[in-house]
Image (cartoon, rainbow, N blue to C red; front, side):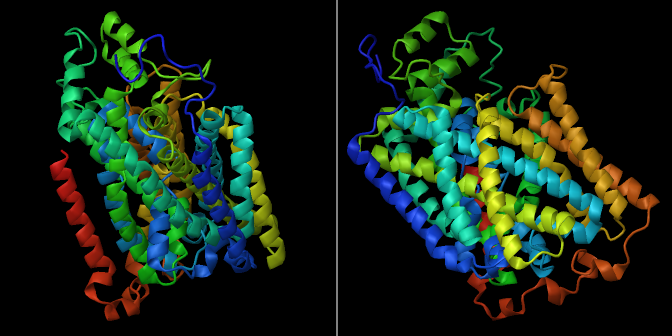
Length: 595
């Protein structure tokens, strides 16, 4: 019958069933996390150290933290859900939708961020465009971090709920308190060093899921055979067309883009995901940029995201591939996918008879793909390690959101507009209080995430509104000295409203987009509207004097301020550009193999 025989599924109150010894790695991990927080407390004695880590960390630390900060809900649950639902097209989120933008950030943009001595991305916007653009960016970013932090917290709480069977709201509170303790103790340094620890815990925890899963389906060839076999059962008159949407090929990716036309799908993926959403996220999202800005030199800041690309290339194999395996191995996910594909009632009934143990009232979604793989494949012992890895990933994601939120709140809202002349002790206290508020608010925003079957749908919609327009405003301001303060804030505002308009049109039923084409269209609309409005308004208004734009506009910034003089003394293999070239070659090879 499958993993479970009909009629003999054991009763359970939890989704997964850990034994007492599975809790050992969890306890040890939390002990390390809290210890790091308290150890780093002595390095967070001032507001500068608490919020920016005093710009003292080496590139390898900030490079791993750069990736780990993103290795939360999006990567683990969202990408495994995407792997189960869409297949290999999900690889685009890494090799098209991340690596090029990370390289661009390291080579082109980090010298401006680091060299301008700003403490946040909104502060950069303030110095480039002025008050209005800065305020819009600061408020929208703060809101986004509370929403995205809620997503990470929701999934963290769901793991605790599924493991222990305790109510979700209690799980949310417990998870928030743990993050709160180590962030308020050690600030950004604690978050970054914990993110390095969390990255290796996550990989060690999730790699067995991939390896055992591949063994169960007969390796990569067995997986491709099972996916092909399942697609062959789709009725000829089904709306799902496996010949047009092949889950074993990343191109043209029509299922994930939502466009029926292969040409439009490729355009949407390359421009919507690979350019607007990707560059908007990786180059202007302070959650990631903050890690690179904590480096000890311009060269280290440049290398941080580039070093991160090599780790990023490996992540799909421990998050997307398990989702693809779940789609052919886990009966509950097979049933969901079969319903989507239009399998016969008989086939769906047979799959339903093989469902494994789930708590009463628990509704399985694609977001559960990784959890169900753990439930059905991992023996006790490895199960505890895998649970620890999931907890680590969600804590890394939420901690990154919270640490970025408290910096922007203190630097760009409280210090800039509320109390500009307070003492350093006061700003440090406000930063810690902002952390408390962020954790409390995230508990409530987590409830929004519970409404989505595929959590990545929500996140991509948020990115289309908060990151895509900001990228347009930012890149115009960096490359075109004629961009004015009025052009900056008006472009940012109308770009955000354009993305909101597209999303609202879909939410209220005026437009319909399967897959994640909604986010792509919203992001493209935001970028185009922002670009046009910024240019038109700038041509009608007065720009800042050139002297005020040095360090913020490429053509007005001397080369000596864009390149660390120590770079020339480094061996070739430690310089940013050669490392970036090696990364680009590797990602081209991966795209060629998994096309």
